[in-house]
Image (cartoon, rainbow, N blue to C red; front, top):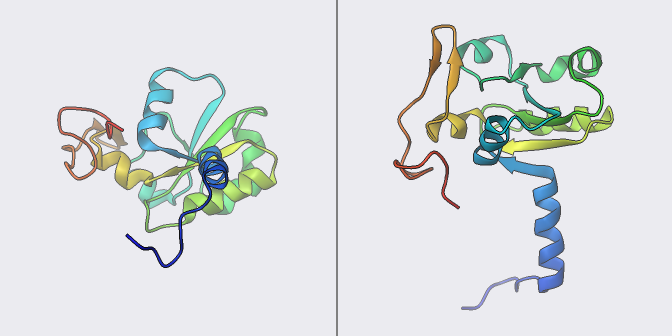
Length: 150
């Protein structure tokens, strides 16, 4: 097969993908870290109030992006590792939130897939009615597993 742009040199590719993984995490890894009680982990939902009420990750901190600069210091312990999320792949709110935390000096990762893929993988979602799980979307994870199995 011929590509219009050839693949990168393996050394450059390894550096690129390692760098990406230092900036991003996925819902399965965040779920595993929360289940393990990873010390110093703070998961931040950067969406607005209506979205938060619609559903959010268990244990997440609600801190809309517009409030991070003024409220992060009072809500997020110094030395914490922050993971930000927003709606999903079609939204860059988690990216903007991660940028704000990085500017303020926190180590931070963005949860790719956001709330959408968290819910689509059948992981627990907290709503005003309690904690619930949606059926696993077989396009995001095997039905018999609670992760993408990758």
